[in-house]
Amino acid sequence: MKTAQFLFIFLSFFVLSSQAVKAQQQSQKRIQIEYSGFLTFDEAKYPGAKVLTRDDSGQIHIVHEGVNMWCDQAIHYGNEDFIEAYGHVKMKQGDTINMNAKYVEYSGKTKLAFASGDVILTEPSSVLTTDTLFFDRAKQQAFYKTGGKVVRDSSGTITSRIGRYYMNEKKYQFVSNVNLVNPEYILNTEQLDYYTQNALAYMYGPSTITGETSKIYCERGFYDTQNDTGYFIKNSRIDYDNRVVEGDSLYFNRNTSFASATNNIKVTDTLNNSVIRGHYAEVYREKDSVFITKRALAITVQERDSLYVHGDTLMVTGKPEHRITRAFRNVKMYKSDMSGKADSIHMDQQTGLTQLINLGRLAPKDNFAVKRRPIIWNYDNQMTGDTILLKSNNKTEKLDSLIVFNNAFIISKDTVGDDYNQITGQKLYGLFNEQNKLKQVDIIKNAESIYYARNDKQELIGIEKSKSANISMFFDGNEIVELRKINQVDGTLFPESKYPQNAKKLRGFDWREDERPRSVDDLFKDDPPLNLPVIKGLDPYVPQTDFFDTSLRERAEKAEEQNKAKNIQKPSKASRHLPLQNQDSISKQLKAGVPQKPLKPKDTLN
Image (cartoon, rainbow, N blue to C red):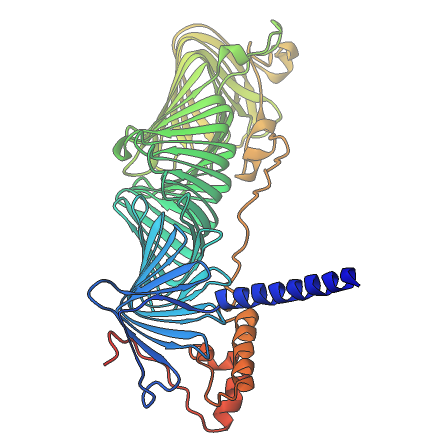
């Protein structure tokens, strides 16, 4: 019996304790007034509410689930767990979030705060200012839609028409007329995700970053505002003073004035009217240099005929008034009236001098193999030598002269037969006419020649083989019309039938017509297959979800149901600032003729 009584008493105590704890917990979830100087009631203006006013010792202190709020005056609707705070309002959440405003509304049921009038939201890495702000404590998100400004010391100032701050992620999402102003540059975009802890910015849609020496454009990009580096994709380009860099993806470092590009690259020299293309490039602005590889192609744009140069690697260096282009490894050039090939090509745009050079270390190791030398084709003429120099006139965009140093060899196919006119010597000097065709060629020192002499009817007169100190050739169009031998040592004109078959080619003869580029596409025909890297890119833009989402709407509807249970007929104050399309219950109120007016910002009760 005693045991039964003891159990009854214990259970009764347990139930009462549980109810007390539950009641205490429920009490803790409601808005609490920690301090108020004066308490009054005004049922005419504020039915069912307490009117709180500060005194000289301090402001009103309000507490609710980890948030503290201070203000000069407040209206506390206890039945609806709702408060309106006026004058020098301060709201503090934990040690990181602080908000100041002239006026704040807060619902303990929805945990939604509405602030207006000189609103300032501060977190450790940034300060947000706006005229109107929504703060959903349940989602830990703040939202403005009437313009706002965020300041971060190292990054600058960001303004936008719409913005949201995700407190857990420490991330801002800005939309519409977004501007980031930094002492070094200005960033403009329509959509920007910004992380306050590491100062990383992600741009979506047409975006520009304009600095003193560069302007960047992209339609998706990333910028480290703290370290001044960026990565840009989708129609990205960088405009320097006299260069435009375009590519599928671009990397940029403002500190070192460096940029690199990957895949489908185009670098335009706006002053010298030239373009280089490829699939990987590096640009050093302060050094006025560009390095490009992977199907690298340099294009010198001319009014009548552009010059194309292709090599494994291209380098363009020098100030705009004195650009130098260097092409390395298996270099080819093409122009409608001239093409060439060499281990490397060096072009000076100021002097108009182009050098074709072969490197000894790349020569065949076989002593019996014909040495590969730089080569030029001009119409029907093939010229080779250890080094070839071409001189052009930059003003007229025409070829001026040609010099071949050491082991000079010029070959042209006979106009009728399958044989070849040939001249070789130590050096070659050539002059071009207005049509960029050779008009005169002089072979200097140890000149030898094989020439197929024909009459006006193109009938073969004989084959002349000779040796002399120098030889001069004169052309009319593509035909040799005169051959002058100076200080001739030996020379014989043989009838074709008497000419030795094994002497039809001079020593060093190497007809390389099959290597001749006849189009821009031919420049790449010997290249290995091109395997471009897959650009990882950046994640696509994720549009903002509705701030006044289902969870917030459900909280507001639950508050209305609680009001109804308490026989409160007026619309719930918890739904006051929710857009009409998100308020199912408010639509019913509208049908019933209940007006829904937005609350205007206030400084004081009066």
